Image (cartoon, rainbow, N blue to C red; front, side, top):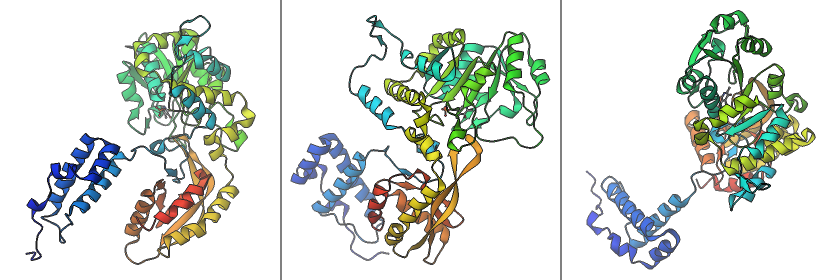
Amino acid sequence: MNDTAKTDLSDLPSVHFLLEQDVVADLIVDHGRDLVTDSIRETLQSLRDEIPVAKKSPDISTAAIIRRLARRLDQISQPSLRPVFNLTGTVLHTNLGRAPLPAEAIEAMSRVAAGASNLEFDLGRGKRGDRDDHLESLVCRLTGAEAATVVNNNAAAVLLTLNSLANRKEVAVSRGELIEIGGAFRIPDIMARAGCKLHEVGTTNRTHLKDFAAAISPKSAMLMKVHTSNYEVQGFTAEVPEHDLATLAHEHDLSFVVDLGSGTLADLTRFGLPAEPTPNQSFADGADVVTFSGDKLLGGPQCGIIAGRADLIAKIKKNPMKRALRVDKMTIAALEAIFRLYLNPDHLAQKIPALRLLSRPQEEIRAMANSLVPHLAAALDGEAEVSVIDSFSQIGSGALPVDTLPSAALAISPTSGGSVGRQLKRLAAAFRALPVPVIGRIHEDQLLFDIRCLEDSTIFVEQLSSLNNS
Ligand SMILES: *Cc1c(COP(=O)(O)O)cnc(C)c1O
């Protein structure tokens, strides 16, 4: 067995003794007595767990224990949610918070965050107002809708629309559009929770107008089209144009609803991006209601926008579920600022970060990547080689799934011996441990940092010096 002298657990100081120390008194001022007391207990417990199994006995001097305590308190007081560098190559990354907000939206949020605002107060009449009033006329102007409302996200928008317009009734959707979006949003499940019966129409690859016509019965309330955001059915395929679906729905007094998913209010081809359907097109085709996300291609805060015919939007607003799904004042402030930017399409590519990043030229990205090579090489200190390679970014969040954008990436290849896989994982972990964590992706024995989303490299470069200590 281990013959080195073991530290005796009974040598550990008491909680009471530690609380009496001067240095701990300072910690109490910063963190509060309860948290410090709890943390002392946890620190002592971790030592009790460690001592019997440790090869080398831990230092249990009072000073060493207090250092451990201070480190623990430091960790506890770190914010959990914090900024990272998204160098994954996926611009609207759901796990990394989707769209970055423009300065105008951030200013609007901070203007209303600290105090009272006219959130639900009509300043003209001096009476209670409606929080949708701040957004509705802007949505109508930008989309051609008669009315609009906003909820917590697009999943909520779909749920609320289905429940308000087709509760206990049937909704016909093409089999090719029964999608699952990351995070367990599945059209069939949402239908069930909304109280609707899903009537699947056609086949996975081909659905015709006659299939929809055959699906209509006295139980029907709605025909629905779901934008197949995160995949594309290719080959021998057929889908029914929105215009034909709208006509069929209206012949039978049904509503026609389009879930656009990402949706956009801009003509993306102006920015060299592939076209994405807009609410305006859906309305021109005869859609009664459309739903779309706030934080995908729109480039705003998380929310779901429901726009369409005034009588249907009124029904949706009256649904008690709307109260449970409503957005807060910060979302409204940010979204209003975003919509105001869309009023002037000429400046969009500069003003909306999501669009600016998506339309960033490969040349500019490559130049930025090249300028970073010496800094990164110095920080890695021979542990890995750094080069710049051409890569492809993705839009993300299910928008335009098949299209990729030419980009440039820093490619880091480990040089020391041993398992490449293990070294890559270790390197990736070291970058994630930086003060502003850097998130890349591992591909073909390299750690890749797609530079599309790195517009200001100052902090990225500055913090590289901490890489070796981690
Ligand atoms: C993304 C998406 C949703 C869900 O939107 P969230 O804003 O993420 O809730 C719903 N439908 C489609 C087609 C989508 O692409």
